[in-house]
Length: 428
Ligand code: ACO
Image 1: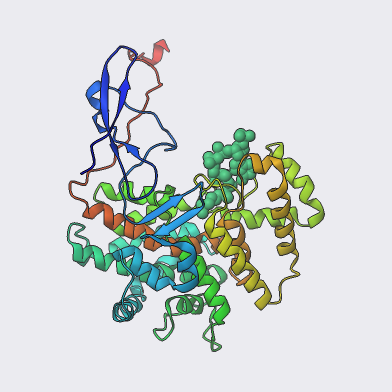
Image 2: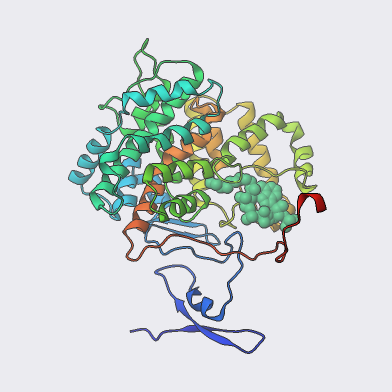
């Protein structure tokens, strides 16, 4: 047995405490600061730069080395050799499925892809030009109103069926959101398609024509989903966990995750990156735009990451997919793609970006791929949400299954007014 290790904290008044050190299977050691409250002090770490909010068996990231593992498997191997439904099984259950388990899981998910017919009416309440993420927050949250039969979060079977429903129905709702936005009829899921083919069918098919998915494009979207499936305790996942820690139902929790994902510093970055490329407009304007970034007038969207201070391993895979897709579609000379490559080159060789360890992240390339697939810019973050749903639900499930799980409740450093007496209106 390992000898317990401690970190000693001594306050300037001489009081001292021994804080236990914790060791994970990978990654840096962690100091357990639970006991600090006995000294009547808290720690201050507002954007969680140095704070682990939970223990988790699901995903490991080493930002300096550029590593990302799902349940121990490197993301590059999963992106190359696996498919999204298998990755979903892995994230949710902890192990890769056998052939029989995969067939059963895949069939189970397929048989949950339809949504209650009543749900379709929700869309009419939104303006046609509503941002698809606004619609997603509302409609996914509304799923809570449909499944009263399985909302006992302390029942593992209920949690499992909710997980399957979310995984299966979020893509259907996402495609409906797109169809509503462009004024086309909703396309019901078709069970003979794979998970990703079915999503593309619901997005792009119309009742007027047959739809045959292009395998290269299906593979590209499959990779986007795999690469976005989980990313340990990021802002949206932490939101799902915090909402879930109060006992809220999983549909409501995932809706809160979708809301957190929307921001441009998180999932909104792929949309923001593409808008930025459109704004730059031409290769000749790259130098001028980069100067504006250095002058801190704006940020280079799709660059930088809180954790990866080296290459984002997902970006390397996405970059390769990006080339494959553009070649398949004959878009290598596409103006925006050329512009993106020029920007990438400037940023990778400029000391400003090198010193700050700012590399293209996955969203820089995924935006270009999604555009090439014909997915409108305002749907980019929705695609991210479709991929991330399995991560959210796996993390939520892990948290609820934990023994002694408690509501999450950060503390604060109060900086407002000291106590003062109420002043009557006439005396103010
Ligand atoms: N463009 C230009 N400069 C940047 C960028 C950027 N994209 N990102 C960081 N910097 C600079 C900052 O100005 C700062 O410079 P300074 O030291 O001179 O003040 C330095 O790099 C550190 O920046 P922070 O904001 O402290 O870095 P942080 O880790 O908090 O931010 C974040 C990470 C939010 C991702 C940031 O890099 C960013 O805004 N990127 C653009 C948005 C984006 O692509 N987000 C996607 C994240 S990936 C995902 O969600 C899948």
